[in-house]
Amino acid sequence: MKKTQFDNPVLLLILFLLLQLGGQTAAGFAGKIGGINIYTLISYTCLTLRGLLWVLVLKRLPLTVAYPFTGAVYLLILPLSMLLFGESPEWSRFAGAALIFAGIGVSAVGAVKNGN
Image (cartoon, rainbow, N blue to C red; front, side, top):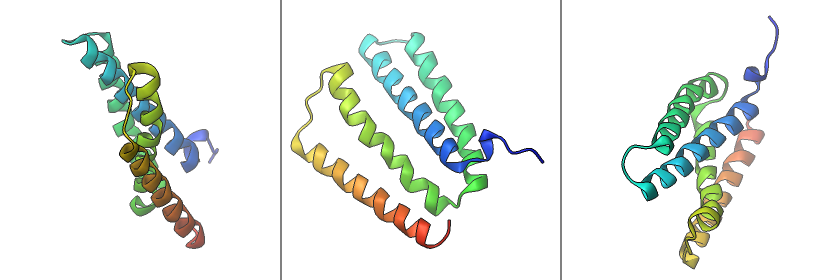
């Protein structure tokens, strides 16, 4: 059987994270405008595709390996909220992001050591 890009769990996780990031960012714009608008449609489309892609991720990776990486979206949303929405988060948000980053790192090291 021919291998495709959809057989690569790392690529699937990256695409999953990009869809999550796109959906959340579009939801932020939709909330600023208010009501139902194009950003609402983009948000729901991204988040629906993300949900379908998650099934493909879980076919290739154990849940305990894949799930910690969903926290990476928060690491990306933090600077985007500053750039796109002019937010100025307090130091506690950055401390929380550092903890998330550390948790993802610990989880990844464990996955590599166990051969997942």
